[in-house]
Image 1 (tube, helix red, strand yellow):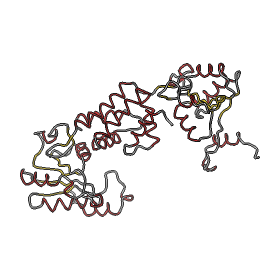
Image 2 (cartoon, each protein chain N blue to C red; image 1 turned 90 degrees about the horizontal axis):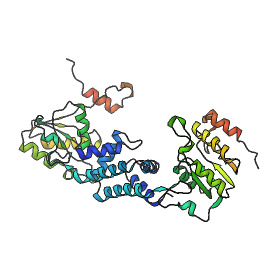
Image 3 (tube, rainbow over the protein chains, first blue to last red; image 1 turned 60 degrees about the horizontal axis):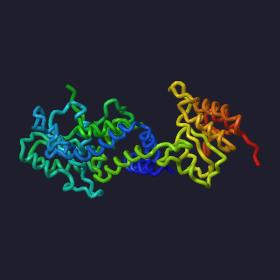
Length: 197
Length: 197
């Protein structure tokens, strides 16, 4: 019902995840009303990001350079590697400002239902990293879904002969209410209890 | 924390209405993983829509042509003009498939708080349309907010000397539950009651 160029834009916006017909329409009508420069800037940012961004050849984090800024940072602790599923997890961990080691991005988790086995993930490169470099600790920080757990156990089995393998703690979220926590989380919280100093 | 081209894309996406930092990040990471062609198509749709789409010179609906497809459609009833705030409202009304007349898009509603007076809207052009063409009925279909009501009353005052002016009905939405309707809606529903056939 919209004029063709606008209909095409709405169609394109609808391909984005979480953007339904109503939102696509709202975004398109917003963009139509913005200055030329602003729309050009968005279009250019899209093309530039797609053209320039690839994966770090060491850790597979998204990077515009062959080696990402984290792997390139000589102030970081090179003896610890934190293994995550996705580049988004790197950003989440970086935001805590608590971790000073390196990362390794798997690019997903093992999920036979979706045809994703260990070969589809950056696991071989991880094993190479651990056996060739002096990695003292591998921290597995993979989300605790069924697939995530499988991946955690699989990588633990692979790397245990070569180095210390730990995983992040699961338990009650800070600010969370015990009463509203699910049983699995509570069981994990109990299991992971620690003696107070 | 992201590599610069990606950070720029996230920044640009965040300028869109209703897109916060988390959604912008999710969209950007999604786009990075899509084929080149898909990202190019979105960027081109953006630029093309912005370049080609303007306003119909008769009704001010968004259009890639000087006169929109509705105004150009000789099968439509040219004696009735429905006045709406926004192009989105035209689409909403077209979807009902109930209306066969023409439209007039005001481009907003009178809102002194936002510095929008009658001069900022396409009201002068509406008066010209009504006085120069044989318009038999003006249907005001403006959302019933405080600003919308002001606009409705203002336009009614202007056009009443020249033609019949009506407004769409307000009342209980279809499928709505009387119990949960607000008082203003219920009062409007009572006020607008009609005798059954």
